[in-house]
Picture 1 (cartoon, helix red, strand yellow):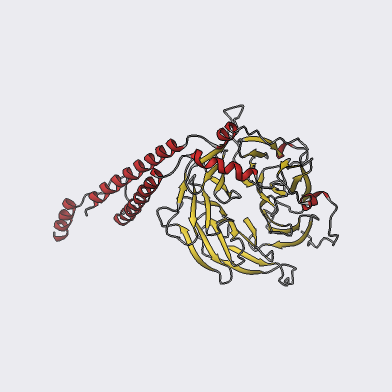
Picture 2 (cartoon, one colour; picture 1 turned 45 degrees about the vertical axis):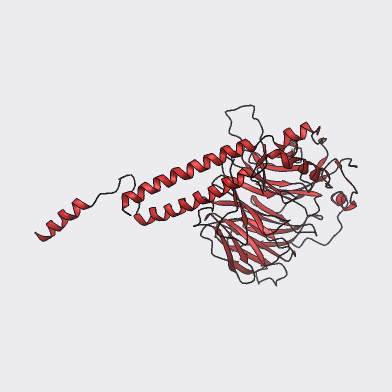
Amino acid sequence: MQSNRVDAATEIDYKAPDTSDTRGRHRISAELKRLEQEARFLEEELEELEKTEKVSTALQELLLQVENRRDPLLPETTGPANPSWDCWFEGPQNMQGCRCWIL
Amino acid sequence: MSFPELKERHVAATAKVNSLREQLKQRRHQLLDTDVAKYAKSQGRTAVNFSSTDLVCSRTLQGHTGKVYSLDWTPEKNRIVSASQDGRLIIWNALTSQKTHAIKLPCAWVMTCAFAPNGNSVACGGLDSACSIFNLNSQVDRDGNIPVSRVLTGHKGYVSSCQYVPGQDTRLITSSGDQTCVLWDVTTGQRISIFGGEFPSGHTSDVLSVSINTSNSNMFVSGSCDATARLWDARIASRAIRTYHGHQGDVNAVKFFPDGQRFGTGSDDGTCMLFDMRTGHQLQVYSQQLDNSDQDAPIVTSIAFSISGRLLFAGYSNGDCYVWDTLLAEVVLNLGKLQTSHEGRISCLGLSDDGSALCTGSWDKNLKIWAFGGHRKVI
């Protein structure tokens, strides 16, 4: 029958996809584009890394920056101290009644 | 191209990407000639010396009836907004401990909240996949609730984190379970830019946290379940500027270092890290050695830096809140082991604008304010 001959022809040319990978052509094509773009980004990053200095280069600056900034939470810090840092240990400044709703 | 040829090219492209990633990893390793702690020790630095009574819990903010999930301070004015499993936002005057507003949310499953720079609005988001904005000066409705003034819709997954762009009350960045971050115009409710999603350099799993650079508010970092942090330029949505590898688990928290040149991360793998934004270098790992190596390390839920960057506060799933000396990579205090500590996991942390106080939020339903109450030596 006609349809059997058509079916037979289709069967010869068609290679069934791997049973382990039944994703469509379009999806694989889109993934391929993404992978190719990612490879380009990674190559750019590798090139940039060739011109990047070692970790130790920036650390002296880090130390100086951190140690020269005033920090109210440290036991020892550069000055001047700000009196408002101790507001958490003074009495409440605003005695307005609590306006929360019943929860 | 035939289907088999397409599949061959796909296999080859995958191999090429893996090989490039490996080359990058090795090249980075070669550049790691030291870390912050080794360098600081070689320069004669010693760890910050806290006595156990130096950092004191000076306020306990009680009022939520469920776990606290998120908190944010206003710039100046010492007000805090907190979000809880009880489906409410509470606005607190941190100095007086009093609640100025309690907002019952349309969707109770809130995960994050943020204060607008001018202190007049708050934003929150969660499992409703939207970010809701409330104007604190609005007239309340007949139930006594502040109505929603704007809903930012468009995310296809939960909103995990939100932050207003510093100095801009009309711009907000959100991170989401849909693998993207979005920059919003709050006035119109429109998405200005979408970061990630279909692009190859976007996150490949849920994005859990976001932090905007206060020195250059065009730059922000995001942390994700794909175990990476990524740096974005808000003006360039098409690709991440840089991807930072190193963690072995979800990156739950990201926070810029005060100088804006570095940022910290906290992860499910139990460690925090400090990265150099520009070079991509991993500058330091903050990791506690466990006595019993069979134990799973508690996960890091949240992080914050003190205003100089000398201290890294890290909240953990077991209720610990380590205070790390960032330069020496040593734990100098554990706020989770003090008498006044929380009774549950610390889920969120934040520093006040002037750096004088740390607020912690916990699954024990409370928030606590910590400040330096010891003898301060000023040089």
